[in-house]
Length: 170
Image (tube, rainbow, N blue to C red; front, side, top):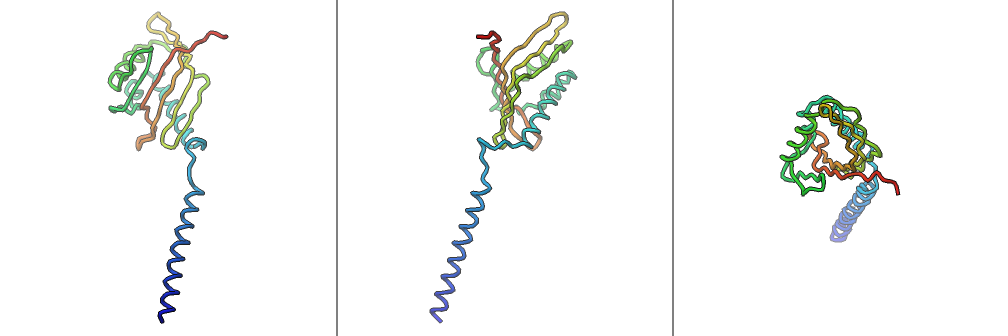
């Protein structure tokens, strides 16, 4: 009887170990590579969000534009070589600038690239914006990076970086 009990205990322990090993192998097989995986569905969602951002600017809908931002104490923006600012300054700037546009001649995003890292995405492009403010035409040729985080309310911008694009050819 003692032998049967020992054999049964050994089989149970072996079964538990084998089960744990199998689960570990299964987890390793389905592990996500955040650096190299492309996340095509998420890329599509980020592109749709960017298109909606662009449309809100074309429509002059500042509330809609602002709704694509994830303002919090973590929000940051760099622009014009100035020190970093936060959400309040970004919202004021976006409402002031895009709210003052009287005509959009061009709103092109050249060399656009989306890189998704799970629940985070970086969208980069070279702007070719031709905007009229009354009679004054302003051309914006910047390198722009927009950092998005996936939330329950869709992809939200949590960081913006704008730098002048050097258009001179070497």
